[in-house]
Length: 245
Length: 128
Image 1: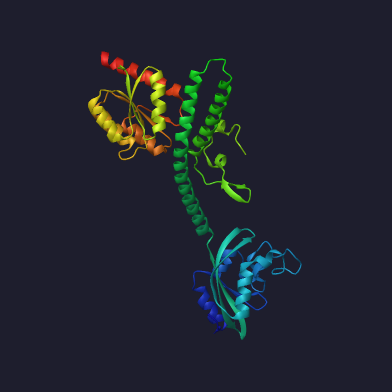
Image 2: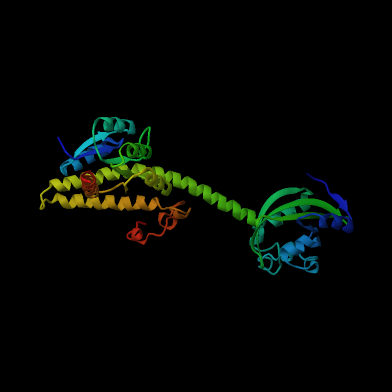
């Protein structure tokens, strides 16, 4: 959507104060010219510490003073989705809806924001109206749900894998026992069979550990990620002895 | 003819073969069944009191089979063998009446010892 709505400062303030989101108006130099009370509450600042400041500094972005020129010029500013979205709206007079941006704000930590921008004309100047929805808690909840779904899928896979592996392991272990019974005490092959039994025992401990997985934890493996069996399972210290890398 | 007979129920032929050899060497007779339905037919014809059941069977599963056996022959001693069982399934095992369970892989000495203990218990019950 393109084109700007025209407002006076008062008419615009009357509207944005009635809305449940943090809303600011940003001018062509990315300075805050208007902020509603919800914004003051969100960044925990009075209005006079917002008005006239460039966006990042006004909101308390930890990167706003990375370089002497301030917000918008640091290395991290190039990746800032808030900045890019605002610049696009200011330049193209185009509304952008539901852009997700992550910012680390002083005193608030990492916040996940969903932003909406809209071109406006205020006092005969092209500006951008910025609405900010803090979705940090929703993101955390979403992450927890995602982890649960992943864990459920992992547990189903593990159940199948353990069942399929433990059957042949039992067969190898059992027939090794029978062979040992048949061999004379001094037969050299006894040691080899005992080695087979040790390895089966080792595999059995791994499948036993797989069955105690309660968390979705991964570790880097070559260029990808794999389930970290030791970190994801319940604490069973004796099974961690001699764990393979 | 063996006096002490064990019913072994598992759909994996190699497991049946293994348990047959191990229990036979220990002096027990073994009657194999590859499904719960086959096991119930065997029990209609033969009197057996010690059984090793795999939980994951085609058709009726090991838990249902145990319920049925314990209903018909409460004195019998039934062991579960499982390649994988969640905590919930183990609770179901207990509720179904299994006397104990073994997670595969389990060594033959453990199974033979359990079978010996089971027959001793059966003998004690019979004398009462």
